[in-house]
Amino acid sequence: MQRILIAEDAELNRELLQNMLADEYLVDTAADGALALEMLRAHPEETAALLLDLQMPKADGFTVLAKMREMGWMERIPVLIISGEHSVEIENQCFELGVSDFIHKPFVNSIVKNRVRNAVTLFTCKNQLEQKVALQEKTLKEKDQIIRIQTEKLREAKPFNILMMEFQAAIMEVETRLKVLNAQFSQQFNRNPFESIKSRLKTPESIYEKLERKGYPVTVESIRENLTDVAGLRVICSFPDDIYRLAEYLIKQDDIILLNEKDYIRSPKPNGYRSLHLILNVPIFLSDEKKYMKAEVQFRTIAMDFWASVEHKLKYKKDMENADEIARRLKDCADSIEELDYRMQSIRNQIDRSLH
Image (cartoon, rainbow, N blue to C red; front, side, top):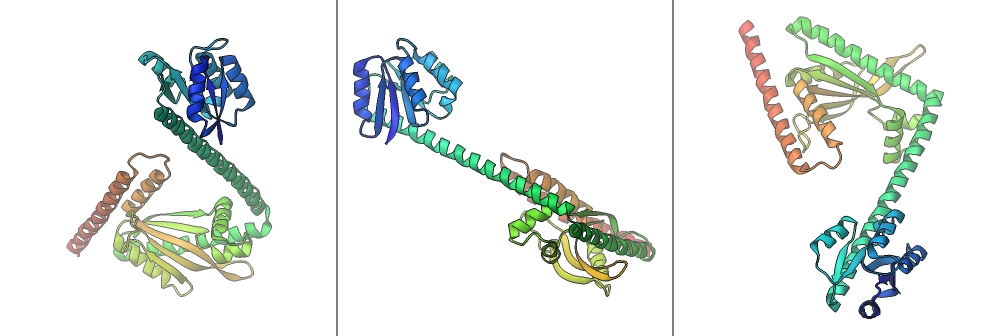
């Protein structure tokens, strides 16, 4: 049974409350505030609730509340004020100090039991939730520490650094081929098919986290075999048809191997995300050998890239209000962007026809 403490200088009131609550709780009593504080100090963790009279000898209820706040007990122990008055001013003052509820005289058995039960249940749930959150925070900190240690080991390992150099070489190889195609388009169609290329090499922290999450061993060979996005490129095009034309010419090259294709332009994700993803095996040429490395290439229009950038920033904001409404509006924007892309492409086609 849970332990509660009744601090009340009137013996009759102590006995009445004790009799009402004895079938559900272990009930301790104190006739003054000083004794109540001593008993709280002896059982701070075991006390599930305090029923507190405001007018007591040695230390009144406000003194007890002040000491409880100082010791941090108010965060763990619900306090219910025993009161014979209905003073709004006093009640507001008590609530501002963190009191949970009031028990008014004369006592009504069912009301006393329900108010105490509700306060105890609420604080029990609150304390359990806080303990769970604290445990989760501790686990996350331990996980972060493990990630830091492991990634530092990766950074110091020569085979890992060689592998990262090879992935960087794959990025440079794809960039070179795309730039050659861009130059050819410029001559053939009198315009450039893409606006810019952005590249990134996955960080050791991100590599380690992904291997762990997917249950793969944290080894150089595991990275090479199991991860397809260590080397990443994003190609920003002006129009949707440039995306497909550029991607087609790239994968038609006889030493480029297409491993996987995900077309989120023709089949957008539910949130509205659009992009063409290619997983490629790309040849790199080292001093003593030619080898293939995986690279992920994403093709987007300028508008698609702008939407994805904004959506990514909003997605990781904490405690957003109206999250569903924001998601709906983002989806509407994505649909509008698709319409805009194809309208602009239609205008470009009309201009091209008028020039020929």
